[in-house]
Image 1 (cartoon, rainbow, N blue to C red):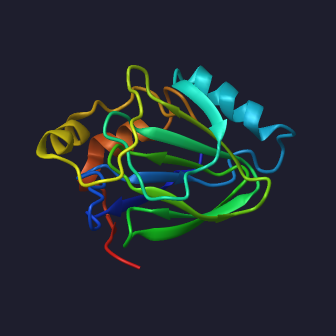
Image 2 (cartoon, rainbow, N blue to C red; image 1 turned 45 degrees about the vertical axis):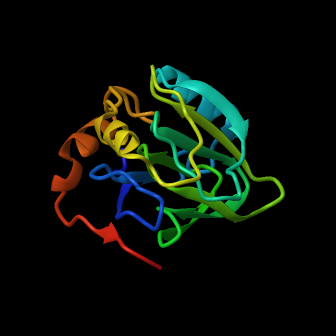
Length: 180
């Protein structure tokens, strides 16, 4: 199992980002061998006990979630996503890639192919809200204290998410993205 990329983001204008959990970027998890990536993402997320699964895209405006961490499985097409708020990082994603965004992480679609399709979901007991303004002190507390999922959405109980997120800001070689 290949370790995901880890990306830390500082607050960016009104977007709080997570104070210590990194974004996880899994690349090409199907190695081009999946005929129906949307169905495959739904299966692996469900098997990992993630819930509230949906199919759509990524909003074309900057937003974040207070009440949930979020997984985004890129099922079809490709896109440029701005992750980490207005001064964040542009990530090119394509079919088979998967992002896990800790609560508070800003995200926005900059451009996408006509066939761009995302399968998304949330850990058990967490529900997404859509925030487009600065977080209140109470919301910042919620973001920082939201439980870490017990299962990686891609690799389940044995996946790297739990250990990487428990290590949080203590990861060796931690890089914080502070602007484009």
